Image 1 (cartoon, rainbow, N blue to C red):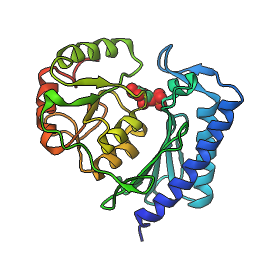
Image 2 (tube, protein in one colour):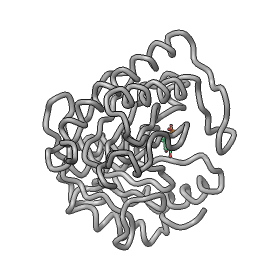
Image 3 (cartoon, rainbow, N blue to C red):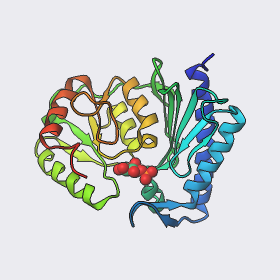
Length: 270
Ligand code: IPD
């Protein structure tokens, strides 16, 4: 029988806190980039790797047989034959550049999927201890308080979050999208960690969020927090949220933002 979302969430919260403690301790000891990944600005630190290894080991101990998809090491664990229906999706440190600089927006992001559906997720801000959680059908919470997204209906009054990938060509395209957007909305925000941006939208601290080029580990946990807070999460033209585009907005705002993003070809480009 499939595990209950609440049970998976409890494991996720415990394991994410543990991972966050390791990241904090390593940061106190001094942090530096140890390697670059896709581009010269896409860095990885020793803590990204250490936290991922630790979270995988903790999950293994709690639920042997589950699969884990992590940002740094890819897929590990049993595949369906002989394994369970559960796949964990992990970004050990979302907001690695903030972690590098000490800007307090970086988080362990951990979601649990059962048969391909995300049913539980936690985003734990390593710097502040803020913790956003959600279970499918059980609502979204921050530190025990139930979350509801913004009720803004007017795009011209909307505070919109976004982010940028690391690929220079993609960044240029994103800049052209912003050129078309900036005069049509209240303002733009960029936390520097997609998982946190999605949680800020879930809390109504920004009205909406969009970004192109996200990986599953950037959006799985935060995406569930956002939808459980009542936001619509999707891509353009009826497509699901994915690498082409993730848009999160309250129901009455989603269509307006969607149409403008279509007009600006936000899902296009490299
Ligand atoms: C990045 C952050 C950033 C977003 C990028 C992500 P990382 O994740 O979430 O806010 O704009 O698209 O790749 O590299 O810090 O785990």
